[in-house]
Amino acid sequence: MRLFRRTKTHGDLDDRTFIVDIYRGILGRDPDEVGMRHFSNLLKNHNLDRVGLIQTILSSSEFKDRIEPGGCLRSEAGDIFVNFQRYQGPGQSGFVTNFLGGLTDVRFVAGTESLSGVVEGYPIPGNFHGDTLEWVGTLRAVLAANSSFTMLELGAGWAPWCVIGYLAAKQRRVEKIRVIAVEGDSGHVTFIRESFAANELSINVGKVIHGVIGASDGQALFPKANNASCVYGGVAAFSDEEQYTGAFADFTAGYSAFIEEVERVPSYSLISLMQDFAHVDLIHCDIQGGEGDFFANTIDLVLAKVKRIVVGTHSFEIERHLACLFAKNDWDLEGIDACEMREESGRPVTVHDGVQVWRNRRF
Image (cartoon, rainbow, N blue to C red; front, side, top):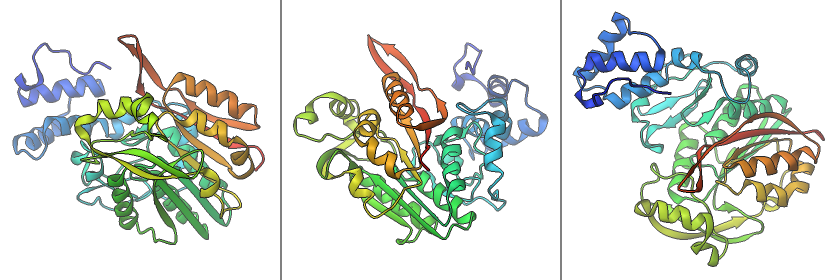
C-alpha cells in the first residue's frame, strides 16, 4: 500500500496537509471536519505525534472494515467472535484492551505507546500482535472445550494467547482452565508474569516456564535482550556448535546491538510439558523457524493428545512441510494464511509470518 503521494517529506508538511495525506492514503477519503479538528488539536498540543496518528488510523474500525482478513472470511470470523461477550468498559492508561477485556501493557512492545487506553473491537483483519486467523483458531479451541481447557503457548513472548485462551474459557464458564507459557528470553518471562497478574491469572491457572521447547530435556542457549520490548523472534541453539551457525548465529549477529548476553536456559521436551495432561486443547506455536522439525519429531504425541494447533510459519518450506505432515496424519486444515517472502542479495527474507490452524480428527 502506498500511503503518501507527495514529493515532500512528512516533516515538511504542515499538520493539515499531513492529515489529508494520511486519510487519503489509508482510508481513501478526505478527512471530515470533526476528524481534521480532532487530529489537528492533538498534534498542535503534542498529545499525539505523527507516528501515533498513523497508528491510530490503522487501528480504527473504518480501516479494518476495508481489509479482509487472511486465511478466513470476515463472516466466518464474526461467527466465532459473537460467541463471546464484547468488552464495553473504558480503556486503561498504559494498556491496550482487547475485545475480551484482556489487558496488554504498552511497555511490552516498543512502538505501541500511542495505543495506551485503546479498547479494540473485533480483531479483523487482526490486532497489533496477531492476525484474525490466530484469534479464530484459538477461540475455536475454547468453543470445542467441555469442562476443562488446557493450552500451551510455545515461544510465548509476553503470552498474549494464554491470556486470550484463559479469558475466553472463563467467559464460557469452563470449570478447569490451565494455560502454560514457555519463553526463552528472561525479560519476556518478566512480561508474562506481569501480564498474568494484570489479567488476574492465578498461579493455579497460569504457569510460566523460562526455557525453550526442544527434542529432549536438557539445556539450550538463548539470546537475552538488553531491552525486551524491542527484541522478539529469538531462536535457541541446542549445542555450542549451533551457537556459531545457522539461524541462531544470524539472529545474534543481526541484533548484536540489542543482545545483552547469551544465556543457558532449560530445554523441555513436549512429552515432559504434557505429561500431567490426558489431552491438550490447543498448542499455539511460534518458535521462529523451528516449527517444521518440531512437529515432525512429535507428530505421534500430538496426534494422541492434542486437539488443535495454531502455528506460526516463517518460510514457504516450513509451510509446505507442515501441510504435508498434518494432512497425511489425519488432521483437518481449518485455515491457512501464507507467509510473505522476498529475496534480498540472493537470500530469502520473510516479510510477514504466516499462520496455519489444524484440527485433530481423533477428537
